[in-house]
Image (cartoon, rainbow, N blue to C red; front, top):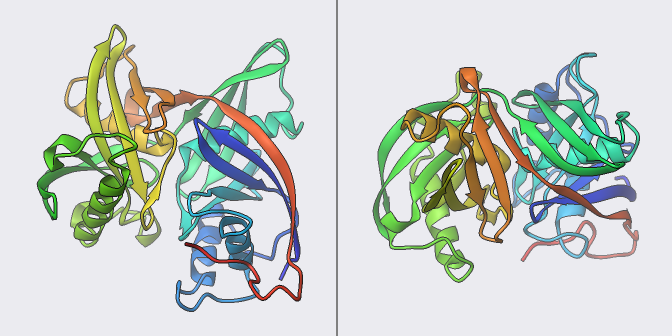
Amino acid sequence: MTTTVRTVDYHTAGEPFRVVAGALPPVPGDTVAERCATAVGSGGSAAAPRRGTLDDVRRLLVQEPRGHAGMYGGFVVPPDDDGAHFGVLFWHKDGYSTACGHGTMALGAWAVDSGRVAAPDDGDVQVRIDVPSGRVTATVHRDSGRTTGVTFRNVPARVSARKVPVATTFGLAEADIAHAGACYASVAARDLGLDVSRAALPDLVRAGREIRSALATHPATWHPDGPLLSGVYGVILHEELPDTPSGPRQRNVTVFADGQVDRSPCGSGTSARLALLAEDGRLGPGEDLLHESVADTVFTGRILPGGVTEVTGTAYRTGEHVFTVDPYDALGVGFLL
């Protein structure tokens, strides 16, 4: 496998994103979605991962001692066509995902910081990115030569089910299901006797895993474009906060994959929440959702015609790395606790 991997790391509202733009093992496919399907298949199972593939690089970067169970990142790949600047395969501790709003924001900042996309000292520039769920845009906001924020415009979001009963060890809850590049189930934390706080994280993670498992075969989690986009990716446990003059305000923790916690308010998850709030009549044209995370960071979201959503946040560079694998290291690509 590749024994030297270079990365540039960012965080978006506290959630890490590790950018890998160098040479990678070949990933067959004519589109980013096809390459994602190939990457998913190359990983094997947790018990028996396949070796000598792109997944070795993912595990090297996400697992200890080079990463951790909360790590997230993306492999930069060619776009579907000349309409985008580049493509990306998103990954986390358990595999790959079809959407990632916080990652898209980080990639927008990285594209400008690295000079891959030219940007003015003052004003905005669009970075167009092909992701497995479609083409998304990161509008990078600049002031005096500095990136001050990024607005993520997602693929259209849609609501597929409301008030689906879900049994958990915390009691019976009702889940709202929406697709926003990935499938999210939203549950009010108070319905489970929980609040969205750091102290409650172990219970929130447990509830999130139970809800995801309970909805695994629900027809509302199926996407018409096939299995890659189907199935619950994340569970959003949310609570209401006092409204602002601009619109609703909520706090959430998103539990995704197999119990991973999003430190940010979750970019594509915010898109799902926007679709639900708009359907409820709680969010209209010109109104914003102030969306807070369990780490007290904030995204601002709005919904546009046609179910298109925009989410604005900040992304900051945290470092550059050259990771290596010593051929005599018995731990190889690492481990997870």
